[in-house]
Image (cartoon, rainbow, N blue to C red):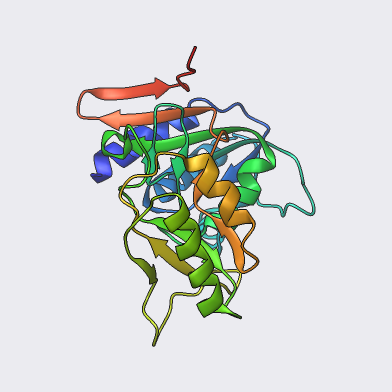
Length: 233
């Protein structure tokens, strides 16, 4: 996604906001552009209190002067604006490419509305081409990975389940966990996979965001589209 498209999507998402909003602030390169647009508006008098979904976003907000709170101080939010790695026609998502999926999901689910900002390359018919991030506890990692593999096999899902960063120097999340990236290729039944992952004790959270997003602001060379979920029936 080019910088121009990121800025277009971020600006269109900002245009959905009203002054005084209690805002969840996402993580990633597109979210960074949104934070810059938000900060410029704050300097011009736009009122907002934000809850960032990562230490990276927190640092950028503090640097640019965006007022912040925690979910303990402000446990109910109006809107979260965040990116996605994949978006299907029902606005189900894969998120977590940046490693902040646990906090992203907590903040999104504390919000009345979630706006996804992305470019058109993130639109897919079926989730799964992007490796699914699964945040897991470092204790019992081997047993957890076996559990994920057995679940995948039961659902007919193949592909590598790799520790992000490798065994010698694994990526560590803001919460102190590690991430398994599952390259399933295609996930025909994302709900069954999401439900099964919840039952594996070492899984902290997964990057399937099902039924959470309210609309997507998608930028392409032809402009910006606002997409709402396609409901079957």
